[in-house]
Amino acid sequence: MTRTRKPVGRIAFVGAGPGDPGLLTRRAHDALVDADQVVYDRGVPESLLDVVRAEAKAETQFTPAEGVPGDVAKVLISAARSGQNAVHLVAGDPFGHDSVVKEVQAVARTAAHFEVVPGVSQAEGVATYAGVPLPGVRTAADVEDVGTLDFDALAAAVQRGSLALAVDAGDLAAVRDGLLAAGVDGGTAVGVTGDGTGETQYTTTSTVDSFVAAALGFTGRVVLTVGDGVGQRDKLSWWENRPLYGWKVLVPRTKEQAGVMSARLRAYGAIPCEVPTIAVEPPRTPAQMERAVKGLVDGRYAWVIFTSVNAVRAVWEKFAEHGLDARHFGGVKIACIGEATADAVRAFGIQPELIPAGEQSSEGLLAEFSPHDEVLDPVGRVLLPRADIATETLAAGLTERGWEVDDVTAYRTVRAAPPPAEIRDAIKSGGFDAVLFTSSSTVRNLVGIAGKPHARTVVAVIGPKTAETATEFGLRVDVQPPHASVPDLVEALAGYAVELREKLAAMPAKQRRGSKVQGPTALRFR
Picture 1: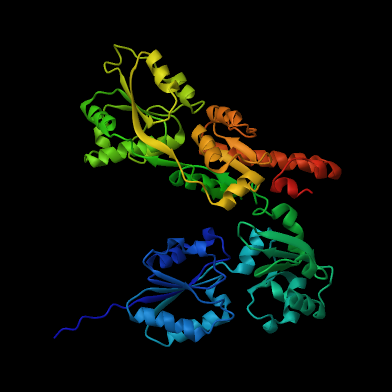
Picture 2 (picture 1 turned 180 degrees about the vertical axis):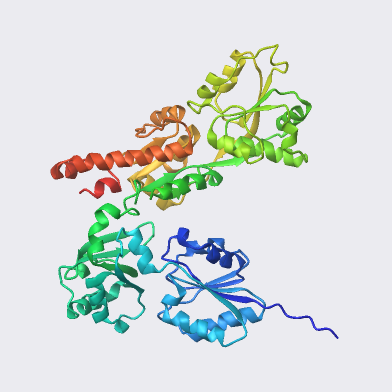
């Protein structure tokens, strides 16, 4: 009788790095994607687990310092023996924790297959994010037990080069006393960074004598940097000096669309809060779209004009229902109102013929759309699939240019449910530093479901129509990009923040305190 061999699982000890999901290595990412069971320490941000499969088991255990290595090893070995891939995800680098080294040793004594995936250490990673170089002979360590530190060696490291230590905030006094007792000059520069590589990372600079008091209020793991490198923060600090760092920005869009804007905002240091104000639903009756798709296949149209990503999605979903694909657009030219819409079309393997080079709006598209010519354009009909509440500007302009227009409702936009009470309160009380409006409907719907943003909130709008609507609702428009696109809108807000910072920096201290300018940029100068 042939026995079926039981599948053998793998064990991976994975370094999560200092916290920023962008610092997770490719190999670490792949290990998490393949995992059937993940044990993660309390010091690991849960956002790093977003790539773990929904059916996989993920559980937090403890910080490496307080855990029992044998307990975790037993969990991992048991999972591997049952044919599962198990991961222990730890902050920083796996071999930066004595307890994890002992886990690896325990697993190595069995027949289980294992690997150790390195990660950026907390000490070195956070020092770099804080703008503190560690040149020369350097010492960097993720410390679990301050009692094991050799302060004489650390003092020598400070004199020869640089020092970075990741420790618990509650151990800072012990570190100070140890450094002073080992002969480190009390006036030596020190930086203390909390929430390293996170959205609210903050660094305070002082000296060995005073850094404990300067770091009052810091909790959890912090990174201590000591030496000449701390003095270079003014020029090298980049994470905390991004244009929108610390800004809480309201993103009122459909749930599907908010992600792209939020990613761009995070790149500039903002903390986006997505509040869906619009839900996209199919038209009440499918008859119009059915006729439009048939017309496309039959060669009824010379052009299809897409005015939104939602319109592109609606047409392709209808194509899929009928088993059609991009080949059935043969002979039909496509125009898009902006780059985001064009990217959605390109995603289906089609290159648009027309995208406005200037203003990306209905007016901008009309300015570049040729009038109908009976000789050059034997087919004189245009398909315009769009929302049920779209303005008539584009359809009317095409008609004036001699085109016949089939203005078809491709989707409906309905008002989303109100956000939680704490979000509504923050909107009305000035809890958000900025709000980004990408259409007139986002203005109307946000005010309808959550109320009007506070006067101190910076209002950024994507284009002139949205600006008009915001003004109608009594909002002061602070930012409007030269081109109507999400990247340009975020770029314009970042530029506004930079200008604001420069303006405040040029003010005398007394004027800064009296300035009505709000937001994190203003607060840093008060």
